[in-house]
Image (cartoon, rainbow, N blue to C red; front, side):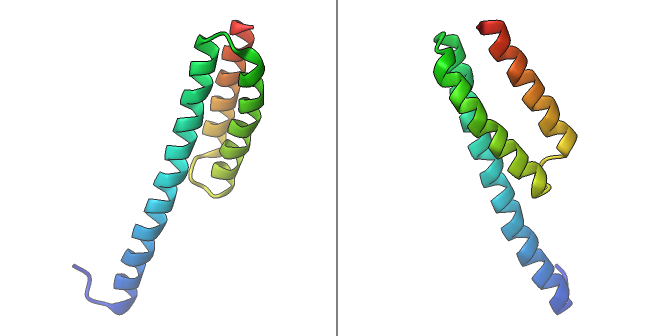
Length: 87
């Protein structure tokens, strides 16, 4: 357990930021799951519109350093390939 006041404050801030990061990741996983379900249902028109939302979420996650920018680019590339493959 930290003793200094700054260490205690840092722990509180880290915990809060960790919860925010988890929320962002959880929302991203949900939308990607919806996307894969749409692809399985052969609903490519809706999947294309949802892909724009996923790209936006990925870019925001990269901007906030929740995910590395190369990770987000890799995910975007793989999602685009899945969409092209199913179309």
